[in-house]
Image (cartoon, rainbow, N blue to C red; front, side, top):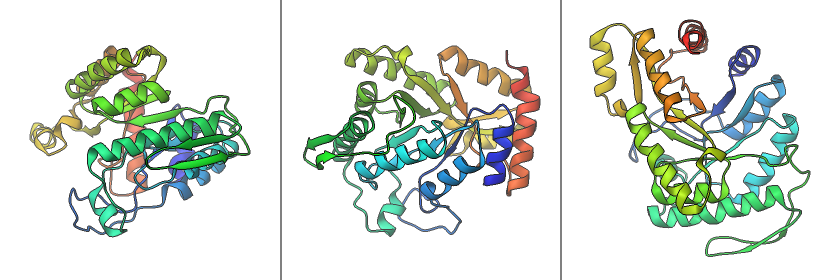
Length: 288
């Protein structure tokens, strides 16, 4: 992980994001073995071995983390990184980790209400000297967050595609992230614009990012298989020229950043670094 961070920091990559989970996702309550490092232990290490790269969790679930803890962690890693931290937040969703660790995965509406209180507290703690808040889920009284972040406005990113979450994003966040191949991303972009209009927020005032599984593949059968898989609507697959065209569509939709997960890029660290090198040399280099 740290070798990958050094590699990205030495190149032209903008940001290194790390998933905040404790076990591999299965989509249900079942368990599947696999190493999953703890996000908030990894990120300070990444900060310590890099100089330029931005970093953050993609994303920290408020169903698991208390907002005061999130705010203080964010401020601390912003100090460690000299102002390179972005706090990614989400409402929480992974069924098996909540089940395994005895953490209640509340109904969606309740989960979003909890998220709304949490992001309001975090935003206040990062911006104000003291925070007092009383809600249905949290109560904090004259809560500090010291030392302060290096950044005057440490950015909060929200990962979501739902209309209600997007309205909360428009009110409190500085960045928005979503999953999707260009067609799905376009739909979510429209929902995002509507949410910003409802909240009285200029959508261009938020940094926006999109992520998709990437398959650099010339074999038509393998491309079809990737696109027909359960994550097919969140996948871009094909030749280098096709991937360049797909990335260009994201730019046309107005996204500022494309995040390339390493799920599909190789079975070990060396293979993933080689794939990132190829992606940068053969694909990113073709984008104007």
